[in-house]
Amino acid sequence: MKLNEKQQNLLRMLPGTDHVLEYAKTEPFFEEIPRSLLVRSVRSVVEDFRTAILNGDQDMTEESLSYHRVVEKVKGHVRNAMAPNLRRVVNAAGVVVHTNLGRSLLSADAIENLQTIAGRYSNLEFDLDMGKRGSRYNCVEDILCEISGAEAGMVVNNNAGAVLLCLETIARGKKVIVSRGELVEIGGSFRIPDVMAKSGAVLKEVGTTNRTHLRDYEMAIDEDTGLLLKVHTSNYSVVGFTANITLKELVTLGAKHRVPVMEDLGSGTFIDFSKYGMIKEPTVQEAAATGADIVTFSGDKLLGGPQAGIILGKKDAVAEIRQNPMNRALRIDKLTLAALESTLRLYRDPEKAVEAIPTLRMLTCSFRSVEKKAEQLRDMLKDLNDSRLSMELLNLPSRVGGGALPLHELPSRCVGVRVEGISVNAVERAMRGNTPPVIGRIEEDFFIMDPRTIETDEIPIIRAAFDNMLKHRHQI
Ligand SMILES: *Cc1c(COP(=O)(O)O)cnc(C)c1O
Image 1 (cartoon, helix red, strand yellow):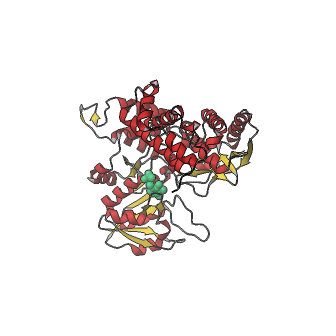
Image 2 (cartoon, protein in one colour; image 1 turned 180 degrees about the horizontal axis):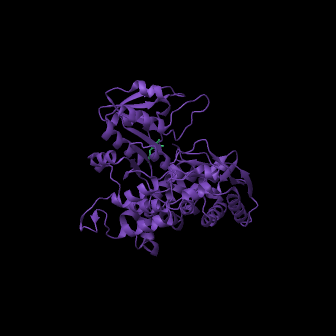
Image 3 (cartoon, rainbow, N blue to C red; image 1 turned 90 degrees about the vertical axis):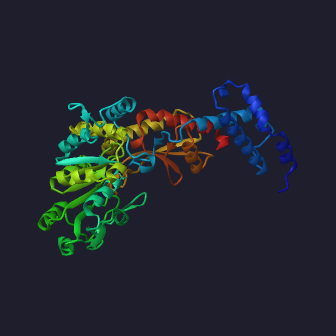
């Protein structure tokens, strides 16, 4: 590569690593910084400058290569490296159970209990009445049975684990009958046929994609059949000319042929969403009331708790699952258990649960209160008094997310922002690069923020992010 005179000159001016390190010694900022990290950061920054010069980056000037400027960059680098990689973000995307952004937020009660249990010893596996070893599931089994009406219950790491564990326990080496309309793939490569294969059970598909009848199941039952399985098609919907049997019908069929019945509910909710003007999702209570041997669902989808896989059902079936050595590999951790127990307790009073559990609060939030927040956000941005900014309020739907209620659109009022002289892609990037990152979406030439998933105390954060972007326009 042929370098021009300006580039050669800049390369000569570029401070060496040792000199920058010497200079940095005089800065109090670096006193507490581990030497190895400092050296790594200085090398990386100097290398970035060199690359920019070689690429003919127009921002590279003599001025930008001063010790002071280089050390400022190193500080930024060090700050980044000291901060955790897993960090909070502002979810302005309007997807409530956003799998990429952490799915569910915990209620204040759950956070408080989690904090106590995290920093103190607990009776995790200690029976305080008997003064001897106890079971880690005891603390949630009672409340699970109380709010669901199931005979017995236990919890594992996540619902994928729950499904695998149940299949392995009940149906290894046997046939499992599933409708062709329910051979679900959810995100992260969890596919019913694959999980089935891993569990050692043999998949027996029946019916068709759009229509499966009771007789399809009945005709497939033979002496090798170990389980009748229903899978909630959480993230898609078969509409039009369809037929599907209910869990209740399947339970009756199972009883007739002495074959156990299980349903993977996917999301699983204790709340009847149709009461809030949303599409009806089968509730956990309804599933348990059918008398199904096993029902499984997630802790962090519509339930609004921590990541967990909840297994409910008949005493014998749950006891058998608990004995499975695989259970140990899928064991739920105590922090999860603490958060889950507190979340479940809130469901004793469903109206309180809807207020206290962020996922439910956001889902059931009225259009008017979302609109109010949108107006607040717009006004805060107006306050920046920058003529380049223009805001519009737009009626765009929020989504439930988490592979739940795929057809359901929650009417919402969003703030669309355009910035003169900055492309919408650059705005999106700048917001994503903020501390904390603000995650919105792009529609046409608008940067869209949906207030449904934004807490009121996050509005000033967004304002500061825009302020910062407008001030540092040249770095975008
Ligand atoms: C989400 C989902 C799972 C997996 O649950 P995780 O808690 O994410 O492991 C399994 N089955 C169905 C139908 C689902 O929707």
